[in-house]
Image (cartoon, rainbow, N blue to C red):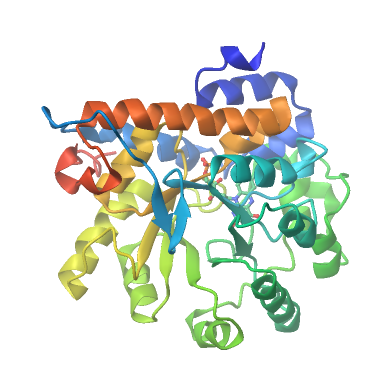
Length: 370
Ligand code: FNR
């Protein structure tokens, strides 16, 4: 079908299922074990309902904001997803170019198929990028990579903390991974086992020894804002705040890691409540920002997370499905769809700006009922 017939983010998934090759589909769509958490990620948003306000002047609505101080035209960012070339020959470049056109931030994955420098070189003047970091057992490799990223102008370092070992993704494991190795993979791990799917093949360099005691070291090697990606309870969010980090991403890695991990948006409600109780901070907060990802498919999902206190949300798979089917045009289409959805839904909510999307605009009383 032509791109004009694609109406929403779910459509891209349905189309991708039809046209993608088995290996790429298995790697992108798979999740841990029985795929309960991946389903819950989106389902959790269905337990939050709106309390819209009426008779507010919504002639003009504005859904731009700032993420870590960086202006963005949408309250979303393109989160890190590895191995873009499985789905399209241009890989993550599709994301970089579309992000420039639509004024959003791209998070570059450690395990991008394109090289890190290629993705930074492809950025338009003034375009901001973040880096997702998998921490290597060899800290010298990590130190060099982080410091290189800082020199190249990366605006935030998102350290993935939910993957000391990669989860068991059986759909992916049934495929043998023979795709070309990304640079990072060979640098990181000479003896990747390719017999159990893409995820397992690329991940053995990740250090399961990473711990809170390493945080001061990260602070000593870089001035980039540090954010932990994959926080899953208020206790760890509180510790991140106390450690002086710039923020957390409440995420279960798109349901790909611990099966029966809760959805990011459910954790969000808990974190906001407890950090207010324990430290007296209110969200959204500029000094300590909370992000959420997993299962976000509609502007209404994003607005719910913002009402609960998130600064912005990450979106992963829809972009992969979009470039696997229509290349960069598909990615741009997603951003256009989201722009349209924000405009209409903010009008219907009675919220001219994102600051008007406040806690009272949602009823989350059923959120914790599974
Ligand atoms: C991911 N994700 C991920 N996260 C990370 O920190 N490093 C990585 O290399 C990857 N790679 C990756 C590959 C693929 C194919 C997927 C689907 C996901 C997790 C990602 O950043 C994010 O947490 C989820 O994708 C969000 O959920 P949705 O939007 O895909 O539902």
